[in-house]
Length: 196
Image 1 (tube, helix red, strand yellow):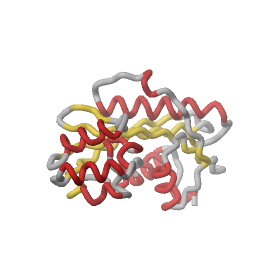
Image 2 (tube, rainbow, N blue to C red; image 1 turned 120 degrees about the vertical axis):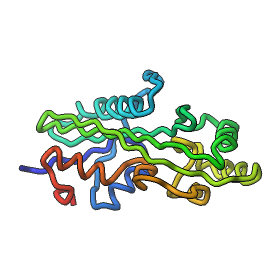
Image 3 (cartoon, rainbow, N blue to C red; image 1 turned 135 degrees about the horizontal axis):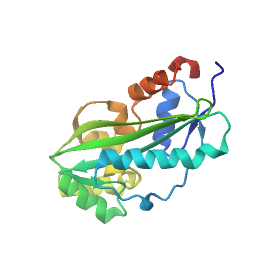
């Protein structure tokens, strides 16, 4: 079986880097899907739906590729958080999250155009946040990093200073669960090493 091109339907540099780290060099095609069209209250359902919409937006541009869509949100006390709209929202969110934990949900979708199959999965990782002073929160938000990330933090950046521990998949918190990707590829009949 000829190995199809791997397409990442995401503008996330973190997801792109994760794939490159494990030897996958994807074609990057951000979907520009309007996420405000989807309103769901259940985090797993929300991220899976958004990931599928992103992948489906890109899929028609290819004949026989493997198209991956992802989406992440953080849920704290049952409330869903995506990227903060601005610095004030990021500060308020960190004041709420510090000293607590949140669950990071990432929806993963693989559309195999050659086999006409679509897999939809969700990975959840619990993230425990450090106690922080208002001064530290403001300094972190001033870096601009929290405004680019679901949940308002980047584990692969300054945010790692404020994550006490993680229960579950580490790469999922960065935006893509590598073990889950491996399993999804196997479910479609591929081996991850086929893409090296």
